[in-house]
Length: 254
Ligand code: G
Ligand code: G
Ligand code: MN
Ligand code: NA
Image 1 (cartoon, rainbow, N blue to C red):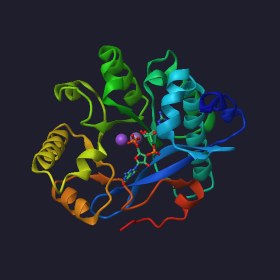
Image 2 (image 1 turned 180 degrees about the horizontal axis):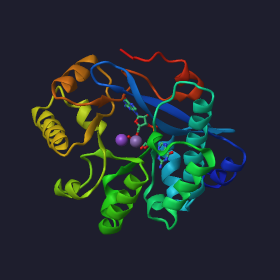
Image 3 (image 1 turned 30 degrees about the vertical axis):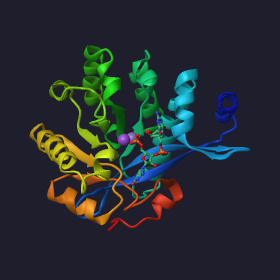
Image 4 (image 1 turned 180 degrees about the vertical axis):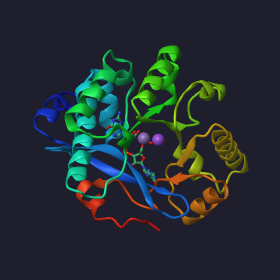
């Protein structure tokens, strides 16, 4: 398809929009943060899923300007809400490998924080295990510097990579996000549930916060509460939505 070509004009023509999905306290349903998820309003194909265009953007290098746009857009929107005295939430941004490993990534983030005036405590970065395994030494040093900047770092899709658990010990991260494949099978597969329980217990011993992704059923929530999972995200509570809809949500999503 021509999507590859269209990506070039999409940024210039302002065809991207950020959606936000709430992350809630497992027990109370209080909204604790949001994850920003980019959407592309294509002029002829309509809404194109990031599952399709992010991999293309990664191949073509377009992920660099797109990733920068996502970061700036999220920080700017949040800073505006803050200035208006509106209720705000920490926002998590998905970071691609190419972005993370490119020279100047940390400077770029600092520039965006300076530009928008957003307190760094309100910014979270989500990265997959595989990103952090490439050039592990440098990755650890960069995570340390992000932490020094008071930015929260989470490992996304946790459990799907090939990393050994011991590498967690060396990574100064704050959070892990359990991949939704684990949550899907949590009530039906005992071995799956055992892995989830093992990860949660281990993470808590390391003072890490655990988020379960893809929670769609009440029974999954109840099971995750029993297993002491801290935070939940999924269609049971809310789908990703435009900023205006997010701002209209109640404080708690029961
Ligand atoms: O929103 P949805 O669940 O359809 O997202 C599909 C995939 O696209 C997910 O893996 C998500 O992490 C990724 N994605 C969504 N927004 C962004 C973004 O801004 N940057 C990057 N790198 N990935 C994103
Ligand atoms: O890879 P990452 O975890 O960043 O991807 C987030 C993706 O998960 C988004 O595309 C979002 O739309 C999707 N998502 C969020 N909640 C649910 C859910 O409850 N069920 C399913 N199937 N997908 C979800
Ligand atoms: Mn994510
Ligand atoms: Na994920």
